[in-house]
Amino acid sequence: MGISRAGERLDVGATVAELIQAIETADSKGAMVVAVNCLAAAKDVAALPTLITVLGYNNPGAAVAAVEGLVALSHDAVPALLEQIDGYNYGARAWAIRAVALIGDPRALPVLLDTAKGDFALSVRRAAARGLGTIDWALLSAEQAASGQRDVLEVLTAATADPEWVVRYAAVAGLQNVAKALIDSHQKPPILLCLHQVFQHDETAAVQARARTALDALESPP
Amino acid sequence: MGQEPLANAEGESLTVEQAIENLRQTADTGLRYYAAWWLGRFRVAEPEAIEALVAALQDEGDRAPDGGYPLRRNAARALGKLGDRTVIPDLIRCLDCDDYYVREAAAQALESLGDPQAISALRGLLAGGVAAAAAVPDKPHLVQPYNAVLEALGTLGAVDAIEEIIPFLGHEVAQVQNAATRALYQLTGDGTYCDRLVERLQAPNLQLRRSAMMDLGAIGYLPAAGAIAATLAENSLKLIALQGVLESHLGQTGFPQARLTDEARQVLVLMDELL
Image 1 (cartoon, rainbow over the protein chains, first blue to last red):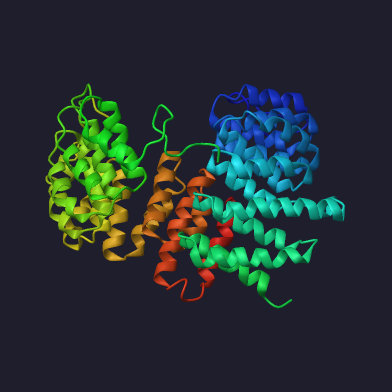
Image 2 (cartoon, rainbow over the protein chains, first blue to last red; image 1 turned 90 degrees about the vertical axis):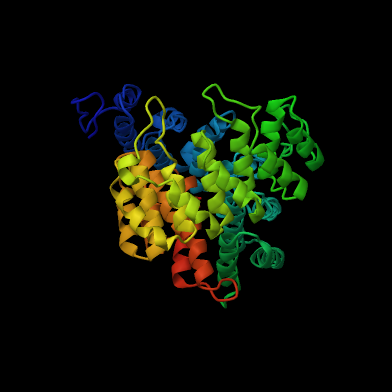
């Protein structure tokens, strides 16, 4: 159940169109959040364009709800998300990247690689670096996965030198996650080397600490 | 990253020499203003830069319509980032400036420089206590930059000021209460002060939640980590607040020479989820 205009309640059998209308007519940030939660709970692909539009509304509560809805739609949401990512305000882009990262669909690889490398907004680079670590490699052939992982490792290793500490942090987390799922085990030593460098030399203690936990996880006996 | 980080407003690169030159010349106040910002942003602590910034603290040429001194503000902010304690007497003089924003920038810079010699002058700005701490008619601020002053007193370890600070817990402005709370925690180590800030993480107002979160991060209150991670606010800010909490703990526990504690690992897990 949700509330659109003051006092008007939506019944449980509301159609997606009605749920979308509730978002369009929401008269406060709080009402918007409720309406988006309702639409997200419907788990209907017809909701996709609206959920994506909500990401750009400067309403973090609504964006969180929209991301949940998009993640629930999972791979069905990915093409639309990827299509919409270009030209967004950076806040919306960060949310979209976050949704894509949580879904883990390998179709997002090219966008995530470009974004982690070159987006001017640090929150977006950070979300993309994290997302590169959560790709579901099992959805690719071994050959595609191995090639994709090489690209990811190159970008994440470079990202451990990003000027922003939180992007370096996300890169370390990404490297740990890729290392756990490596197709080509020869890739592991360079990852460990990179993480050791970060642990020893990063200027930000939080990043050093994250490298330490990554190394502990990767170097512990099986 | 495809963007030139050392560009000026017209997109041209600045060198250190050029920036200092821009700051010294007086024909173009815009160039001076930008140069002052630039020197702070890129941490240019060379003697000529410091000298030029200190001179700019007395500037009379750059005036705002409201009578303020924009160049002085930027110069004070920059000096706060350069770690040179010889400028402290000059910043202390700025605490008497007519321009509220110069006083605020000076207080913040004095906090960053971390030298207790500034405490006495900062305490002076609390004169008259809460009763005097009123809003200025037609202005968006109080008579003094209380937040900045209280935070600075906390950071600088002004234990002698505890009794003066306590009444500000009851000031009508929530941000001032938070600043007093934060300072008192730093000065007394009493965690119950932090409980107030943790409660504020659930305030209905986003700005209050954000500022309570940033305060908890700045004072490094580890028990608040979970509550910070769950606050209804932007992930970017939550990450910054958690960094503050984590790094304070890491400092106290001797990392990286010493092992990571379980508490530190838990904070890292919280941070991972917010990326």
